[in-house]
Length: 338
Image (cartoon, rainbow, N blue to C red):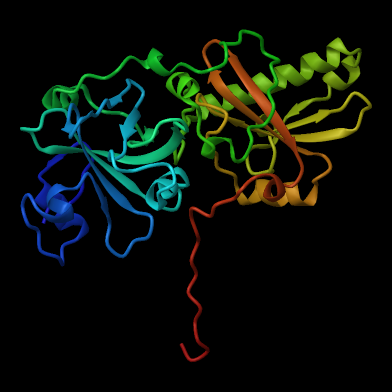
C-alpha cells in the first residue's frame, strides 16, 4: 500500500487503498471507482475529492481552475443544490476538525496528483445544480516541476483580487469580520470577484510577526503624539524587545487619558478571516485583564512596504473568538502501585 504524499501521483485504486484498505476496489464502478466525491469511511465530515479539469456531465461542462495562490474554484455534481445535506456540510466545513483531500488531474490520461487538504472560502448563493465553491488549498507551495508533469496551468492571481482597495496608510483600522460572514455565501457577481484567503496552520515567519508588531508600535506612538500626548508616547514599551516572549502581550501602550492597555499583535499577509494561534500565556493574561487587553489583528500586510490594515478587539480572548484546541500536552496518570 502506498503512503499519502503531497504532490505524488496515484491511481484511484491506490487512493482507495490508503483510505479504505478493508474494502474491495472495483475499477470503473462504485464510489471509489467512479465518484467525484467520496466520503472517508468511519470519519464524519472527511471526504476525498477527485477532480479532472475539462470534464462534461450530460449537458453541463465543468469550469474549474486553480489560481497561482492556490484558490480552487470547484463545482459540485450537477444534481446537487444548495439545500442538499452534503452541500450544507461542505459550507460548514471546518478544516481544523475535518479533512477534505484534493486529488486533481488536468489530463484524464494521467494519474491523480494529491494536492493537499482544502479549507472553505466561499460559495455562490445564486447558482445551483451544480453549486459553485471556492476553496483554499492549504500550505500551497507546489513545485514548478509538478505543474509541468501535471500539465496544469494556473489561473492568474489577479482573477480573485481582494475586494478592498490596497491601502498605503499605516493607520487603517477595519471592523472585525462577522463570525458567520464566511458561511453565508455571496451572490454570483460578488462571488466571482471576491477573494478571502485563509489557511489552517498559518506559518507566518518570525520576521512577519515582528514587522507587524513594529507596525502597531508606530501606529500607537503616532496616535498619542498627534493627540498631544508626547509624554505617553515616550512610555510605550515593545515588550519582547525589553523582556522577551512569553509575557502574554506584545505592546504596553496607553489611552489618551493615560490608562494602560496591553496589546497582543497577530499579523498575517492574508485576509481578515485568517485564523491565528494563541498561547496559553496570552489566553490567561486576557482572562485576568479583560478591561485593558486588546488583540490587534493585522491583515493584508506586506512587511517590506509596511502596508496593511488591522482591526482590534478588547477583552477576554475566549469571549471574542472561537478557540479550537489543536494541540495537547499529555501526561500519564500513574497508579499508586506503579
